Length: 450
Ligand SMILES: [Zn+2]
Image 1 (cartoon, rainbow, N blue to C red):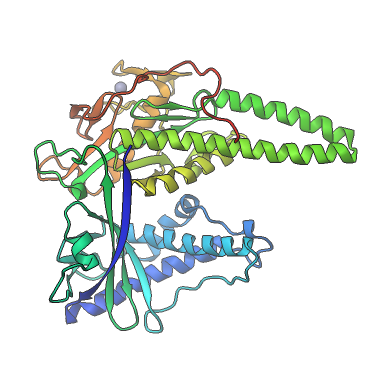
Image 2: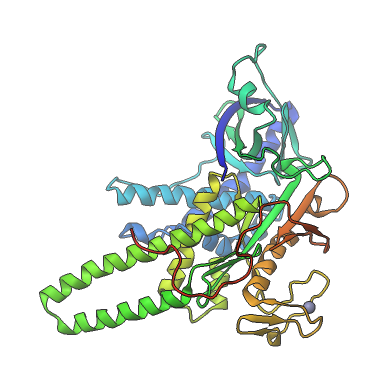
C-alpha cells in the first residue's frame, strides 16, 4: 500500500489588468449555481438536520442540466459541477453543526462586490503550472495568471511543494479576498514502494495528462460491488438474508408489544445499523484497494438516482447501503489523491462493453452471464456493467484527455490490463491478485460489526 499526502499552498496571483473583470464575471453564474443549490438542499423551515439534503450526486442530477441552461452555457461545465459541490458542502457543514447542537443559518453566497469569494477549479477547468496557472472564464480565453513570488524562495512552502516535481497539482481554489486574487494550490504526493506513478510507458506521461478509470457496478443481488478490474466484493445475498431475519424478529417483537420487547427491538436496531455500516465500510475499503492496486486516477460509480431508476424495487436499506458505500469510497479516496466520480449512465447492464460494438439489448444479459447477441462477446454480467460505467466517464472527458496523439492518456482498468476508449488494450502494469475471477458468493468476507 502507499500513502498520499496533501498540502494547500496559498499563492498570490498577478492577474492582467484587462482580465480582472472576466474573473469577477465568472463568479456571477458560479454564485447563482451555488445559491440555487442551497435552495434545493434547504427546505422551508427544516425541523431536523436530516431535512437538509447533502448528496452531491442527487443535487447534481436534479440541478445540473437546468443550471447549464440558465447560465447560457457560458459557464464551464466543470465549474457548474464544482459550484454545486461547494454549495452541498456548505449545507453539509450546517447539518453537522446542527447535529452537534449549534445554531445554524442557511448559507448565502454573496456578490463579489460585497465580499470575498472562492471558486473551485479542477484540472479540466484550469491548467496548473509551476510558475503560472490559467483559469476558464465566461468571457474569452482562459485567464493566465503568474504567481507572485518572493525574491528568496528558500524554505518557502512554494519551494517545498509547488516546485518539487514529486508533488502534483490537484483540484484547487481560486480565492478573491476582497482585494486581490489567490490560488490556494492543493498539492498531492504519493509515497509508495514504486515511485513511478502513474506508469510512464513512453516517458512522456505526466500525472496531469494521465487518466486511468476504475468503473464500479453496485448490485442488490450477488456481489454488492464489482469493479472493472475484476474485484468482486461483498455478498448482497447474505445481506438480504440477514435483513429478512431482522425484519421477522422486528415483527415478533412489535407484536409482543411489551416494554422489554420494545427495549430489545431498540438495541437490536442499533446493532443492525452498525453491522450494515461496517459492511459498507468493508465494501468501500475493497473498492479503494482495487483502485490503488491498478493505479487508478478516477473511480466511477453510477449516480444514486440512476441506480434507483435501474433497480426500482431495491429495498430502502440497499439504497442506504449504496449511498453509504459511495460516501466511504469518496472519503477514503481523498487520502490517495484519487478522484471520485459519478456518471448518469444508461443501459449499463444491457449494453455490450466492447468498444467496437454498440449493441444494446435486453437479451444480452441472462442473470450473471452476459453474451452479446451481435458480436458474441461473453463475460460476467456485472463486470460488463462496471466496464460500461468506466467507459461512459471516459466518453464524457474533454477530447484533450482522450485523443491518442499528444501526451494525454486515458484508460479503463480491466482484469488483466487496460483499455482506451478507441479500443487499444495494454497488458497490466500492476500486481495481479490471487483471485482475478469471481468466487462463489458464500459467507460474507470481512463484514462483521466491530
Ligand atoms: Zn457486442
